[in-house]
Image (cartoon, rainbow, N blue to C red):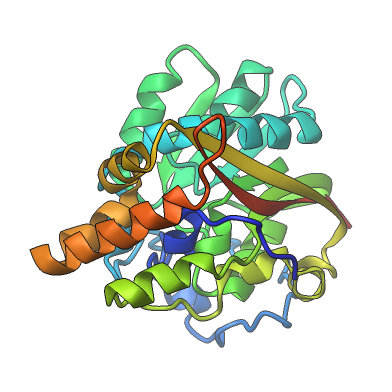
Length: 313
């Protein structure tokens, strides 16, 4: 897999801390289904037909919905705007198409698609983010639902386009997520998602500060690996991978720390669990990390990602 030249707290903590936003209850209609492994990407036609199911997300791990309600994710979404623009542009929304934005957050991708004329549904595990998405989408043909990427509350082949920007990749059961993305996408429909490449630079920051961040298994960055993607999605989609680099510039290491420590949800949640001494050690290490990336423009942080495009078979 590729490596990013620089690291960012957002994707690193998303990948290591957030046992993210999706663990849905299965009812009797799916009670006998064994957990799906990443290499078992075989959508089951009609699996949901006629079943009464409880799709409410179930909290687990680090209370992930609560984690994503910390900080100010809308300000994070603003920083990710170039990636949102790229994803929507490559998927080419058309008037009247049915779109699903999985792990929509505050609705950045969904709203862009709706503004282009699509009939959009956004789904997320965090109620507080959905409130913001609904407020931003007033007057657009867009609806926002509480739901789980591992157990989407929609019928088979319901959507022309299924999208997810740095969202679905954090579902802990990657096979189930891949299955659901394929299941709800009609034959000939389009898939678009983004995934971070691995970056190990920040691991040393955590280690030197004595901050223990639980790892997530399987690692979300596996979604950026071509072979792993083939096992997850290759049977259901013709895939194309487009490399990209996300870049953010801030005026100083202090500004970087102040922004991440008050805005980025997993980062805020992590800091809330540290004692004052450990938090100060982490601040010192993190600002030193930011200092190493100072340029003439300010502190420049970069992260490699991949845009995954697919056509449903």
